[in-house]
Image 1 (cartoon, rainbow, N blue to C red):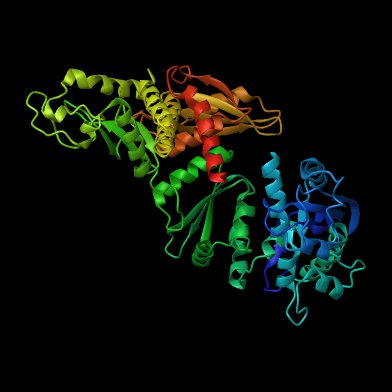
Image 2 (cartoon, rainbow, N blue to C red):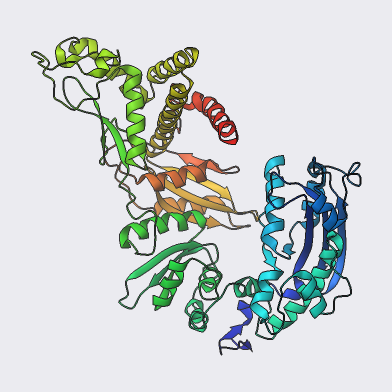
Length: 573
């Protein structure tokens, strides 16, 4: 590969490293005027934007906006925008679609970009528009990287516009300030070009501080393919320091050495790294699964998640005459879970026990000669006191059977009982206690619903599914007992079924293990379930029908949505 430019620290760039040239990048430089400094309580009064590419202005966008509130006097004095001027202006919900279309596909640029983008994100969230998450360049931040205090004592827009001889003077009106920011942006891009920043990717990487030692390590990514996969950073003793996934291995790993990674511990990891290994994968799903497995195998010190994929928590019934619910690490047949934390599992267990009247004490009770004393829960009517002989095994067993049926998907009597208890508390105006019980029941319902969905997938000996790759091809996954056994692709023009047959023939053999998930790691099964339920994913074939219990927690999902909405209102109030 022939190098075409050299950075100030001596590192060379090649054609494949250039990315999107800045001259071909479309920027939308925008500015807002508002009634204050905090999105939400304060509103937008004016939007101005200029679309530029290669130094040429492609279009402009400008409008006043009715903020739905009076303009404070100090803002009137600063901007000259009065409430009377905004009387006939459109509200932000009418302006947003037009601005988002104007800025679609472009890099957003603003002077003090966090301020302007925070208002736009808040407006999108409030009015139900998805924030497109564009690349954002802040000219304040860029100026601080390029200029010294000797160059410019101030980084205010007015000072930079004067320094670079902008033909437009900033005046706290959105369009004029955006036009001045365009001139500042172009002047700053000329300066960063002198230090080798020629592409959008390099510009975004250049903004954070980066040491020469980091930048010199960029060559550690040169051998990696521009394909999806998993990368492993290795330390001086060949130990695995960090594992991650990428849709483009070379581009993602190179970002670690150019400064776009701002997390302190990751920068520390990069300083220790001696080499990077890459494992190419067929598609993103395979990369996610391989990442999980590699993290579990190597337990890298700089990964914070998924080091113990099998260390979930489960709820089981104890094996005794008067069973109780116990939170354990190892699942067995009939267990409810998985739970990510012991605290959450205990909340669900207490809600379940309270719904059917199971005891919560840990003493062993004889079926024939109980000799205990009733506890406070018995006096409150929340336990039948089998310890004192007030309940026989036969009288106690309906609650046990109800829990067994709930976990197996044969009935939801415990959930219905808990719901009635909740309604009784609300009817008696014990609202705080009702809210607490509601939240506990929501934890239980989510756990049961997730358990049914995961176990239904894990029960299938073999399932083959396909997802469109976005270019009239297909991405395949062969799943056996909740684990990814094989993955591959059939790109556009390749007959898909022969590929499927090869993937099935070469797939990993998976022997089912114990427990509700047949031995599958819960996090891996969860990833596969999310992928299978994405729009556009199709089942190619399955060894047995894939179905969830008809009498499971699925019908309760609407109730969960109502609870989530109620909690949001309480938090907002």
